[in-house]
Length: 429
Image 1 (tube, helix red, strand yellow):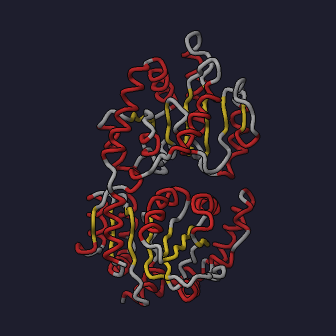
Image 2 (cartoon, one colour):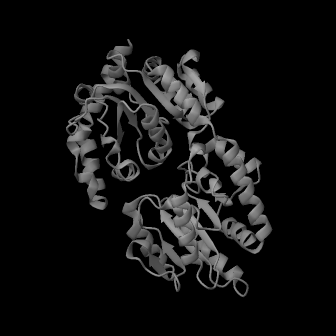
Image 3 (cartoon, helix red, strand yellow):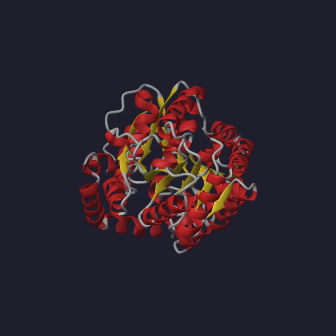
């Protein structure tokens, strides 16, 4: 019966192939990188030249790739006789992988979850283990690994109530898939309980915590952040609000809040700087137009513009956001004013920066709860509240310091998931 459900799933996937290709073409209109490397998506991976055995790490896009960085580097140090191949599904994720690891890992797009595509990939790479970051679960990929005795480890696993309810609609397929997973390293006991409820064996579950707390701020990134902070502050010591990883529908709210902020601070703090960083690069030009239409003076990071006379700096580059978090006074983390589920608020917390978000935080339930309960983060439901919180923090240095210190303490106190995850890899490999 389980094979029947997977057969139906596979047939549907094959029938949807023209739609998938059309979607790639559509996305390529705004992001030309989607036009290239299609063969990889169907399992024809680039030449793999290594006598070593492979560890396969899959990180679907940017967020998962950033979470995987400390894991990949730890695996490289712990298993020098293995070669790592890191896959993703998006061009932005691909750029992050190349920037983070260069030629120290092999890299390609992951194959679509069709039996022939997955078989081509596995026959070429022959990995000894598959480590999947967070919740990228594909029935045919997992079944093929199970057939070839390749252990599958879900690392930093998270499963929101919303996602769990969606999986329940295809319970027979999901139960079979989870039965073929070797181990799940869940971020929180609630995530683990949802995996168990869907069919994961109790013996396959380990609650490790969130690996994103194990990020490292090395001396180079600290120096770069200090340099940026000096440049952005200027001689007038202007305060800096960073709006990070914003989505469609949020930028307008943030621009409204920033307009209110400037008006309310007028006469006391006349020149705050907003650093606005959209989540997806294909939106950079659109957000630039929104800023100009709202009559703000705009500088663009990619152009090398001076921010001295600008109201807003558009962060239209890739790979700099972590540094930006170290060069601001307040960080608003996007994907939270719209129902995306929020993005990584642990990064600004690690820098000791007070955090603001919207109300949609289901992607970071545990981390957001820790920061909220620790008075390190505040939730804003609309532009008025966002402006009010920013004014309060800009005018109250002590409150800003207290929130930032609390955020940093929480980030440091919750480290340790990486060590537990590596122990699980050792038992699984």
